[in-house]
Image (cartoon, rainbow, N blue to C red):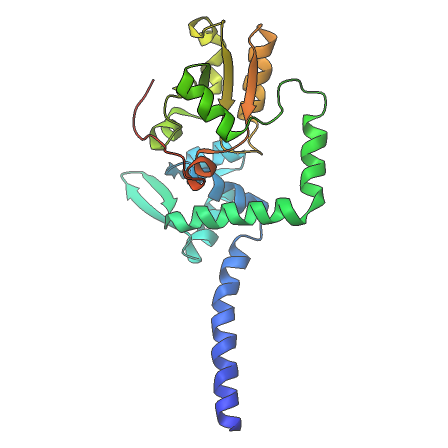
Amino acid sequence: MKYMEKQNSRFKSAIYEQFARIGKAISNPGRLELLDLLCQGPRTVEALAKEANLGIANTSQQLKVLRTARLIEAEKSGLFVTYRLADEEVCLFLRSLRLLAETRLTEVREITRQFLAGREGLEPVSREGLLSKVREGAVTVLDVRPVEEYRAAHIPGALSVPLKELERRLSDLPVDREIVAYCRGPYCVLAVEAVEMLRAHGFEAFRLEQSVQDWQAEGFPVAVGQDS
């Protein structure tokens, strides 16, 4: 009997130790951001370092940890190594973690509230309301992420206008309808900056706080590959 109890205990300990590998791998804010970026599509270490505002050496080290936990994979082509999620389940897991934190940690809401306080037009727009307006042709939807992320997946009908190109393309945008900008989710600041720029130039602009992954997880269709 004692032998069986020890066997059972060893089995449970071994299993939970493996589960803990995932917990250890994501117990770093930099690694969480890198995973979030990879949810948008594959990237080289150089591109990830730039987007996450991390040094290349630091980014490489964090990616090594994620790869050891088998959350990401790497493929070498010439001098460059491209990283991608090991499975789409990783992105769903990250989204579940975010939703849990939003539910259980009041600090998340408070930090967000303070950041958005006094910023006109940054109230979140509902997915359902936006979808209805898009179908009616009542709004212009802008995807302000880098173009490679847009090509990986985007909201159908959205125009690809990366934030760095927005100012020079303002004259291409219609002035007689609302504009809704989105990026990588509620904690991505690209759409925040886009809405502020649009409003400063007289556009009626709002922010969609959901990401493409949120959009898809809620059962809405996404488009792949097209460019505006």
